[in-house]
Length: 114
Image 1: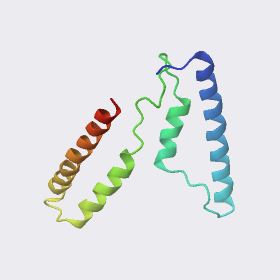
Image 2: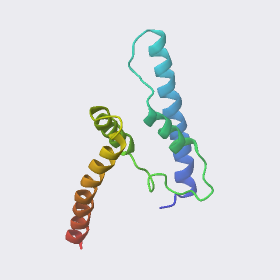
Image 3: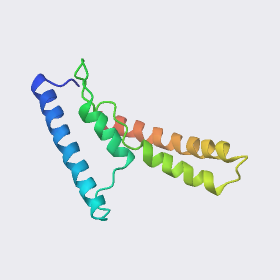
Image 4: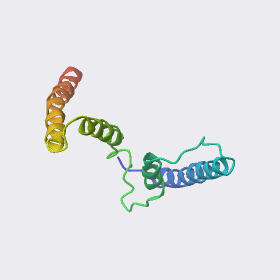
């Protein structure tokens, strides 16, 4: 759950190396009008995970929620397909319908592992 001093140094060094390298490749690709290395919102999250210094040295993967952006994309697709007056309510209803199934699946996984 918490990184050792060496692991923290490795996280910062490798994070900086990968971030700077990717950004340099992205800049070069844009200059050459080749869209090979796109900087997306998850890249912004990656930047925070690799550059933020925490006094606690908490492993950043402990609280990571990688699926958030994917679910927002699905909710926005639903929102565009329904009437604008009821869009928010319909998105919430559909989310709640799927929530019970996901909670049951997680509970069954926990029970089966015991």
